[in-house]
Amino acid sequence: GQSLEQPSEVTAVEGAIVQINCTYQTSGFYGLSWYQQHDGGAPTFLSYNALDGLEETGRFSSFLSRSDSYGYLLLQELQMKDSASYFCAVGSNYQLIWGAGTKLIIKP
Amino acid sequence: DAGVIQSPRHEVTEMGQEVTLRCKPISGHNSLFWYRQTMMRGLELLIYFNNNVPIDDSGMPEDRFSAKMPNASFSTLKIQPSEPRDSAVYFCASSPRQSNQPQHFGDGTRLSIL
Image (tube, rainbow over all chains, first blue to last red; front, top):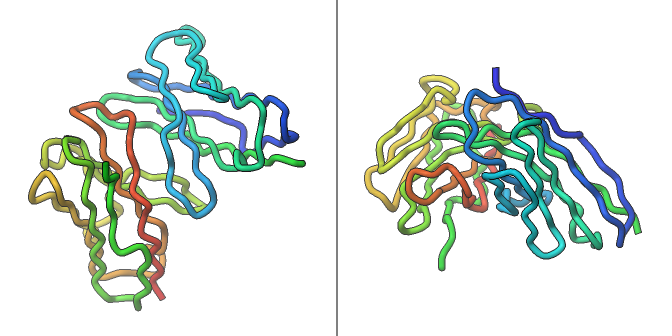
């Protein structure tokens, strides 16, 4: 079967750095994406990795290792507004296979 | 640029009634996805359209659910008859060309079936 594994919850302190890991097992691979969803909101696209390595977008970075079927999202200089759920998703054929999401709790 | 537009934002109705959810994808996006999200089951893909043609509807729960895309700028998801277990947030998302990412989501329809 196809599956993505990510932690259900991560807690961090405002101003710190946090890493959210994602491992996947899918029949096809067309890139790893990360989405952010605030409570009551819609998923919002954050980043996309098609090739191995690190992609940086402001305070957020995403990493992919296809040989390890592994990726992570790195959030730096955490702000209270970063409190949300973060989903990894793998492109497999025509659709995205979604992880269950990681709830990021940020403490002042 | 306008994003994905869904209507209504909220819908409360009694079981047995017909419910129609609407979606206008981003102009130029050829792929459209309908999702359902609940606390118990997370984000579930219901159906995927490419160039207005349904490609995979294996995620549609049962015959009570149907979806159409009569043209490139409009899609509907219909539930008839509705049941309390259909209560969820329904999202529509679109993606450019035949790619499945990135997907741009609408604000969702929060559906409550009493």
